[in-house]
Figure (cartoon, each protein chain N blue to C red):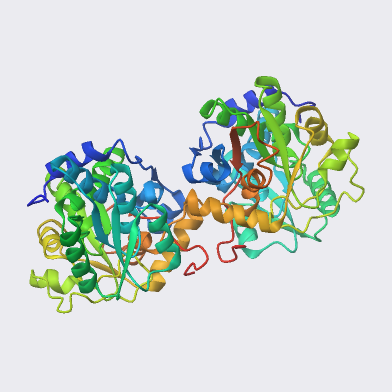
Length: 320
Length: 320
């Protein structure tokens, strides 16, 4: 695992993974632009391999570990996209994989992880227990534990999405990035801060996360680090941001964070599916939800980049 | 209106409209290929302007009419995509438009047609009455009646989708094309027969259309030409194929037609949305539904082209 995050690490990750993943397209919609009175650019990671951006970080971390020496197997904790990404990456590299899942995981998601070749380890739905399970299994089996929120190679891999994005849409004024454990925002914000610091990076969160209080205090204030949010954005349920990611956010992002509730996420998800004709999961809708809600505060940002982070929605249970 | 259909008319249509519409992408999915044991190419007309391929034919017909002399206004009959396409095309050309709709039209679709700038003319839900209304209004107002199923310029415009498709995926063995009134299949089949006759063009129909009997007899056998099918494929409800289109089908398509029911359409629609991550309407799912059902009969066709005809689904009422 690398000991710090920077744009060079993102560029290295890009060289490592770009031939193995999709260069996802940018979509635009004149109707959505009219509604928001902005020019919006949607980076379609819902079309990415395994259906989400997470393949970027996991594949990078696993390839890097493989380069660095003998790799016996890999393990991570996830209730969804991370697990699929780990399983897919491990199968490409040719090593076994284990995904620690909360026992509340949906059958669809568990099946998808298994279909990509991983073994499931069911645990009580508590992030601390999941982490401890991963650490213990990694130690016992000699596997590499890919920490989804604290591993700099994961963050750097996730950051490759913005390197691509800026090549495809070079004139952005702002990027709106959804925040869960913090792996994506860290990779994106660090890269942008070094490569094109004029672009403002805003954090978007599901209501209840309260990243704003921690940013105001400049230290993470979450007391119960295992708390999960009650949000339809099932990829963004963990409340706390890890220490590593928080430092990057504090250093590189706008001090003002935007918060959206379930109804706002659901409305934005429907609008994206109706207008862009792409399937996204609820977590991917936060960017548009924030533009719609915070238009006034974003009045100086005309060209806005939004990452459609994933497309693994349960189509039998859409929230609208 | 032109008096016959040929590949040259399609090429002329392409020169006329290609700068005004999207060149839609081809999507593929290794998972769908595995399921079907084929290589499938999906032409994404759900991303087309107004959300369906129909803009191609209507825009071509209206531009051609404009070239040919003074154009006072345009009229058509439609319960959906055709109406949106006419309205959009008319607004681009700068003439007024009227769409005769069955009074059973959904509010969503009626609103979409009005949003593109057309006036609605509500009629009893009977295709003969709709046609007669269009003919009368066209005569009274001096408007051009764009007949969606019999106008060769509409068919030629629709045929441009396959010109593009063959440029993007040149090695197809077969094309599976859904059949409603027959405008799309006519343009596609005629172009392929002239330009690349090795490619087999198969007709796919919603159950109950019974194109097969007419093809066996080599004459159209539908007695009640106003009959509508009970199908979830709301773009393909008219049972009969027009005389003009039937002649092309009889001359250029495979003699074997494929028929799929509502459950098969719904299953294929879900599979496409889950795997390709694109939003389609039920009518767009017929190609995959047919490949899944008729795999054995298609055993000599390895590379199959499918047109995702539109994306204007009612996302609050998905059929699965």
